[in-house]
Image 1: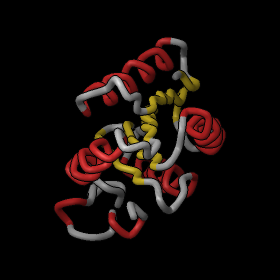
Image 2: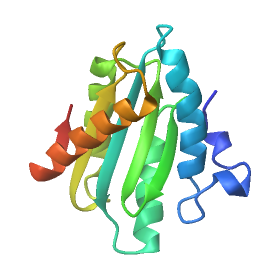
Image 3: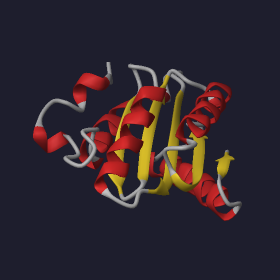
Length: 151
């Protein structure tokens, strides 16, 4: 549904530096999926941040992140060394497994520490911005701790 083929599609939806989905693509898909999450479909977001000193390193990071996810996940480049992954049909436990796998996969590719925030849709979330704030807060805690995964 989300799949890797979507990021290769229309240029307006593709990040030219990484070949991944761009912010617009993410926002369109995320808005649609968030509205379905209240009907019982698990939805988890993973926000990854690290430094990329140049375009080649940024592309390598994007490729590694893409290779580490399932074909049903959507990986988007948000800018700089920030990437977001939509883990559809994944609860927090499954998201933690995916985040740990991501952290291991980025060792040796990332320059400096890798910080990963993880958050899952909860029934009390009424606006999509609440889940985005939750994952961003988790990322900030991970960055403040010097890297790693935070929920």
